[in-house]
Image (cartoon, rainbow over all chains, first blue to last red):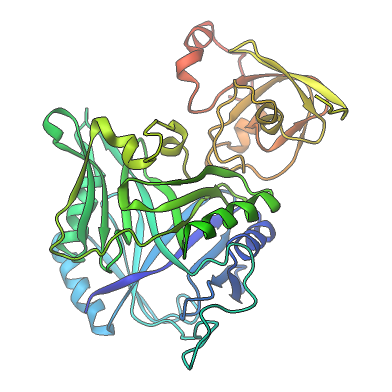
Length: 314
Length: 119
């Protein structure tokens, strides 16, 4: 019971046509639905629910909300009680608020990011089906991403004023939504400041991550690929499509992910990564990265700072 | 090198950098293509606001939408825009107004930029 995995991310885009082209041709997603408001819904080939990305027309970029799927409808009632008891207001959005989606429990994380939980989304199946399936379908475009895997949210962190939304979010996610911590960055004298955290509900190193910054925002949404070679191919796809690559293929120390970062046509950062890293289990000891090795954690090979990576986000 | 497209000069007030930018490419892309520095580089797609600049002289053309979270309509009327979303039509003189301005623009900021009548 409780949270299963990331369900979808709703993103603001400034040029819908360019955005759809990007998520279809570069990530390899397919449009499954459009609504009257002009929102476009897409899914990856290996996902079985109707959509995992929603694009909404806007005059700016950024995240509208991120949603996680829970196992049972009754989980929504139980979690609503727990979240309210923790002191966070919630709203139960009725079924049909989003098409093909059941009722959603909406609330704000301590960092003010909007999160939604839902139990039901229309099942449409993966593109290889469930009976004697092939390992992959023939019609994959672009990087051919398997699924939306996680998101990283930037959270206000100001040691001078004592504001640390990373630590507040982490406490909430672990105590109320029953996520567990896999890795963290500790900085400051004696490592007392929790400056970044990676948390999970599944068996992968992270289903959500929080990193400290000047303001709250969205750092990236990330999609899963099979192998290091698929990361290289994804980079080729980006060159062909003139996609702005932010960080060329490399490896993270944190989560061990093999990765490439890039921007959608509105400047929302995407990641495609490969490698499941390790088996994340609740009794696995938490990995800690120290202030002096922070950039080794981020970019393992060089260990060098790339300020734009932590300072540029929507 | 071996690039014969028509170009105009773009100069960055704070750093004194001047580079040739092809007409039709963005001010930021022109700088990036030459491996030059001066304007901070972010998403290069109009969303993050890091390459915010103010056009002081010269004519530009709009290449795509800029995030209203970073450039308001009032600011746009005062010449503010994102360097990744506009291209030069004539030679351009600009000042960096984005988030990374502090390390190298303190001296310039102290002198005060040109006032904006709309403000």
